[in-house]
Length: 562
Image (cartoon, rainbow, N blue to C red):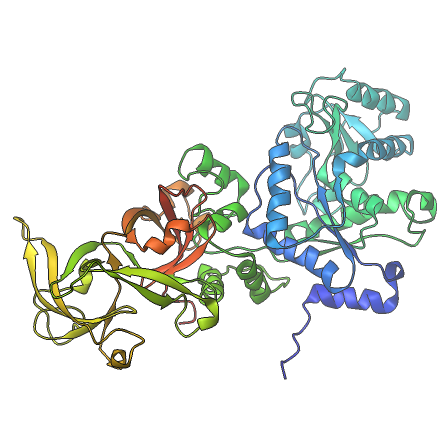
């Protein structure tokens, strides 16, 4: 009997709330990305949590774009985020935008001003920061903190009409400049942005809410019950609750269709940090803009589109998230575990094919005829996964390293002297000699074959100490193979001093031309294969019938478990 999996601490909170009838037993979550970039694997951890909780407890998870900064946001990012979430296998209930609530948020800000809980500040961002104080020293009140309510209303409305220059004024909440929680020291609620139109509302709005003011209220408007985010927002939670306290409950019960007792609760879990990469959008943007990678979907990038192009599957990525779990403790996850999960997936599903990376010609001198077709299983021992046809003939490509002109008894592959070696899924051969060019490089290997040793026949049961891969010369296809490795040469580039770009792995990409089986002529982008003895590969998005391109997903060797 399979052992029941223990609940993570978020699931324990949800089950406790359900048992106590909190929010009338409703479960509603949301995934709230800012549409200012591409999703990366750190976001996937949040996606799996937000959507996973809703799935497990018969709730709903909505997708809400936190589009409160038009200077950085674009419809392109909205579309890629939707595509990535769907590719991962999740379905949202509804799509919302923070901009859906701009009028409601503006009305709330007006209410704050009228109640004496907000004021317009004309200081610079630097002055405001200097006056914030320290965690052990109180801040200094703004000289504009006690402005009359009527003047604050007039100025805030002028800000919205576009009469105030960008950067000249902000609206701040009037809370407590001595609060030990720095976020309570009169946080900014609104700033002016007139230099960039909004991707949905155009130039209608001149003032835009800050995250801390918009996020909790948006949760409240939508009916979110569990607002789940990462640990860096834990210190923001008291402010999240403060803003909701100002208009929820009996004072503003008409604002929510969920009743006077409804309120969302924020809960935090640890972020995902993985070795040999960076999770900073800023740093990833630098890599892209400076051409250090080939775009956001470069297979070395930790973006979802990069992982997809690398050959990672939704199943493997979700299994990875399940394995690392959710806690309240930050840590660094070994990238080897991510590679381990994709190997575990592909070893059961990826067809095996032969690809020769460093080819040398093998001539079977006693083979007569025009050639034949070998039927090979896609995955040995799994007939249910089908077979493929391999062309066989007198001249084959083999790996240069599979032949040594002079070899000791520890080398079991091809070498003159009577040693038998099996060609994968076909015949047993013996090397008889080789031919070299003027520089001494071997150009051709000669061998003889045993016609009665074909795999799958009565005489094909004879065992050899080595089996080598091959591709028939006349039918072989040329393919560009991109051998990807880890993007950075150090485990934790974010923790190192100096320029993080100096830590890039110079060997993170090598490109070779390989000879591959003719069965790959019909391979389509995102088809997965195991190149025997080489690793797992995926057909690249730019691959075409006349130019096959494969990306290495991972090597065959798994060091993680060791």
